[in-house]
Amino acid sequence: MNLHRRALFRGLLGAGALAGLGGGASRIFAAPPAEHRFVVLYFNGGWDVLLGPDPRDPARSYAGIDLGTELLPEAYRDPLPVTLGGRETLWGASMRRLVERGHHQLCTTFRSVNMNTVAHPAGRAYVNTFRSPAGAQARGSSIGTLLATAGPLSESLVMPNVSISLPTFNDAHPADFTGVRTALAPGIIDLLQPQAERLDDDVEALLARAQDEARSCVGATYRGRPEDQLRESRRRARQLERENVARFFDLGADTSEMASLRARYGLGATTHRSNPRHPGVVAAITAQLLRTGLARSVTAQLQVGMDTHRADWGSAQGPRQRLGFDALAALLDDLREDDPSLERTTVVVMSEFARTPRINGNRGRDHWFANSFLVFGGLLRPGVVGATHPESLGLQRTNLETGLPDPEGEMLQPEHIGATLAAALGLDHDAFRVSPLHAWIA
Image (cartoon, rainbow, N blue to C red; front, side, top):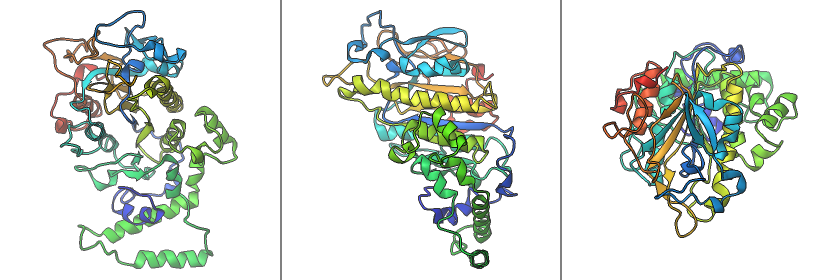
């Protein structure tokens, strides 16, 4: 559901995400709910796992890998030693802030995940639903939509499922869980504030009554009484306006609360306008959606510019990753304030595929099958599942019990991660057509 106009929010949204939730919006800013929260974050373009989740020791040489250390800024040459679930491993220097803040202690890192494609459209469709696409067409519901269904709808949950800068799909779940999509993170505020200056109260009341008394033109198309759903949607939109919910998303506001938020995410007072795709902007809006209780599940494009086929690999891949991971670290800081161990929070981070172990003739890296995924919290056991070949970054089979390479094991796919997340939450995982990794569910 792509809502670029507030008018649509007051109209068609009522057929899904705002209808039937019961109660009003006045309670959404009460104490944080005990229900689970979900974040799915996407690095657009195909990240280089050698600079991020799956690096190599630069003190060694590798038969099938060009480390390209001499092409990198000094700050990105040396990976960081980390302990994940008792296992010593490495993370790229771009992930330093995550390590400094201790977030690695709650991370399950999946490596050697076979994407079965090196085409952007197919890869993007794959990581949207965690199910193999039909060509470039996504199959099934978005993973954020599935996760949003993990719990009943409450009266305070106004938008259960939000998608920022990404398509969202729902093929099997109640319409209430259909994603509300905004093209840019700051666009959330447009869904929450009045379209124009309010008229006199009596005029506003007359307009509202006229809207509610008009029968919907979609009645012949949809089952039930869509006009009732539309009326409920409009009521909720008006309630959000009365509560001035938009103030929690006005990143440029001259208030101590917004100044603190900007400082945590490394933003200036106008960054949200000059660079609305800035990872800090995306992460800050995501945090506000969850911390206020307005949403349960948020899927967002966190960073762009990963598709570095040329010399920009050396100059930009590391810094761009770091901006994304720094924003992720700030988001985890916020989410762990009321959920220190992420027992009721799941954060999934991925890209559509990885980049080649060999540097091409243009001093960049091309597309590669062997990907990595990160899950923080998620009711999973921290550690490392899977390993690419140490000399070639090639795919290897994995023992799904131990997480170690095993020629008799299985090839990890996104479906394994999707099924495991679903099983950990008690959701139906049959659509993924693989068995969950039960040994990795905490």
